[in-house]
Length: 282
Ligand SMILES: Cc1cc2nc3c(=O)[nH]c(=O)nc-3n(C[C@H](O)[C@H](O)[C@H](O)COP(=O)(O)OP(=O)(O)OC[C@H]3O[C@@H](n4cnc5c(N)ncnc54)[C@H](O)[C@@H]3O)c2cc1C
Ligand code: FES
Picture (cartoon, protein in one colour):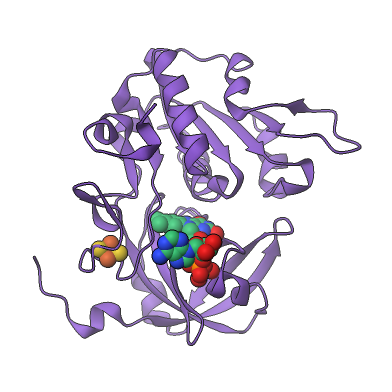
């Protein structure tokens, strides 16, 4: 195993430029490194993540929700979950956090280029997919057609309203929403996100699916896509495991023989079927 130096664990200071409230649980933080050279030399791709830290409050992996095609913007969308993320939700523009990365493997471009892309998201799972969707919109020739299926628990849990409004009006995108349970005023679909597959016009042979969400949703969706004729190589998802180092040293994020931080977080169903992983067990 490659030896790591202390510097590999040192976060760089980043300033919160803007905070967007996406719903009662999720905020998007727009960030810039405190030193200009780091901003100039920073590169990432959709699917990768940063280790985000605040002294005395912890460190956690958070995926990019922005696209690198829009230069100078790092956006991380954070759901309030525990110590670090709850503290981040109290922070304001101008405050500083620590960032190290980017880490992990991105969504593989070769599986996406020229194909119909089907994005299936549950809850905060739309954050990493937002990065890919906006990347694809900015690279029109390579990614001609996108379909988005997004499921939330309740209508009031729907996040990324500004993006959803833009995507729903975009000529290259078909976008469908559903909720597990309706609230007064909701006249949209009610039911599992996989039920939306019946509304979309999809040829499995020409389509690659990108699935992000809670483990149960991932398990059900991967199985459904396979049953509908998607090849296992054309079903991509992101896996979550608790992380400490983020760089392949501590093994906290092990998933059978793989480490999510360096071998993932993006995996195809074909890769997952080789592993003993709860999300693909029926
Ligand atoms: C690759 C990757 C990308 C991610 N991207 C995002 C993202 O874009 N946005 C986002 O909001 N989140 C994302 N997450 C999830 C995020 O990293 C976790 O929610 C993280 O735990 C939050 O840190 P925290 O300190 O706020 O909460 P924690 O204190 O870590 O607590 C979070 C929850 O995990 C439980 N928990 C804590 N420690 C353990 C443990 N050792 N074993 C089991 N359960 C435990 C707690 O009880 C609590 O319910 C991502 C995770 C991964 C692996
Ligand atoms: S988080 Fe340490 S090996 Fe993955």
